[in-house]
Image (cartoon, helix red, strand yellow):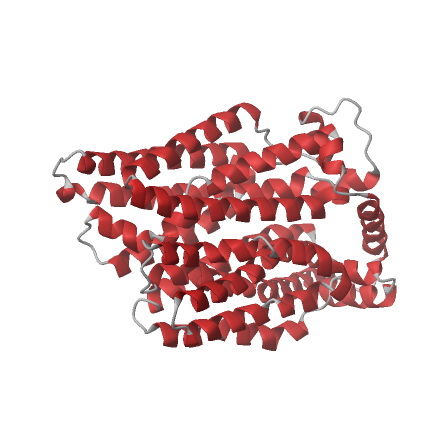
Length: 461
C-alpha cells in the first residue's frame, strides 16, 4: 500500500467515525431543549409547585444511569440510545397537552430519565466506536449539541407559544430516529455477545480497512478486565477510593456552584436584578457564551491541564457569586443601587464564562481517565446518580432560600461553598493531563502498583 493510499484510508476512516459520532450525539439536542424549556416557560417558578417542576428533571435523571447500567449490555448501545428518544417524545407531547403542574412535572420527570441515561451511555458508546485520535473531538460534541439545544430554546422559545415550541422540539427526535439505524452497533457489544463476525464487520465500516485483528484482540482484553471488576472495588481498593472521592469533590464543585439552578431561574433572577436589557437578548448571550466556552475548553484542556482549568473556573465562579450576593445584600439593607444592575448582570455572564471553562467539563474528563476499565462503568453510573442528586438538592435549596431569606443569602452561600471546594481541589486534585494510567495511579498514592496490561492501556481509552 502506498503512502497516498494510507492517507486516503485514514481520511475515509475519520469521516465515518465523525458521522457516527454526530448521529450518536443528536439526543444531546433534546437534552439541551429540555434543560432550557423551564427558563423560557410562563410558569411561576417562585411557587412551591413551580420549584417541583424545576427539580423534576433532576429527579428523573437519578434513575437514568441505573437504567443504563441494567440494559446497556442486554439490548446493546445502539438500540438503548434509540429507546431514549421515546421518553423525550412522550415528554413534549405531555407539555403540549399540559394544563396543570402535575402534568408538567411528569413530562419533565420522564425527560430526566432519558437525560440521565444519555449522559451515562453516550460517552461509553463514543469511546467504543472511535479511535483515540477521534475521541477528543467526539467527546466535545456532547457539550456542543447540548448548548445548541439551549440556544434553540432561548432563541425560539421566547418568540413562540409553549405548544408550538413543544412540537418544534420533537424535530431532533425525528432526525435521530431516521438517522440512528445507519449507525453500527458497538464492536465491544458484539464481542461481549460472542458475535465476533459482526464486530469485525463493524470495524471494517468504521476503520475503512479489513485488517483489524490487533484492535479486536485489545477489545477482548478490555472486556475480560471489565468482567473481573465489581462495584466493591471502588471502595475496597485505596487507589480507586481516592479516585472516587476526587470525582465526588469535583462534581460537588460543579453542582454546588448553582449552575443548573441559576440557568433554570435566569428570567426570575434578572427581574430581581432590575436589569434594563431585554431578557430574551440576555438569554441568547448566555447560550452563546456556554457554546463558545465549551468549544474553547475542548481546544485547550490538554495544553493547559485539568487542574488549572478547574481552579480558574472554581475561583472565578466564587468571585462572581460573591459579587451578585453583595449586590442583593446592599439592596436588602436599603441602598438604592438598582441603577448599577449592569454589574451583577456582567457577574452572571462572567460566571457562565468561568463555569463553562472548567466546572462543566473537567469532572467528565477526569472520570474518563482516572478509573480502570474494570470499574469505570460502575464509577460512571455512581457519579451520574450523585451529580443528579446534587442538582436536585440545589434546585430545591435555591427556591427555598431565595423565598425565605433572599437572593443575597443564596449567592453568598454558593460563593462560600465553592471557595471551600476550590481550596480543597487546590490541595488534593492531581494533574492528569498527558499522563498514562499507571502514572495517575502512582500519583493517587498506590504503594504497590500491580496493573495488567489492559489497565495500563486504559489511558488511551
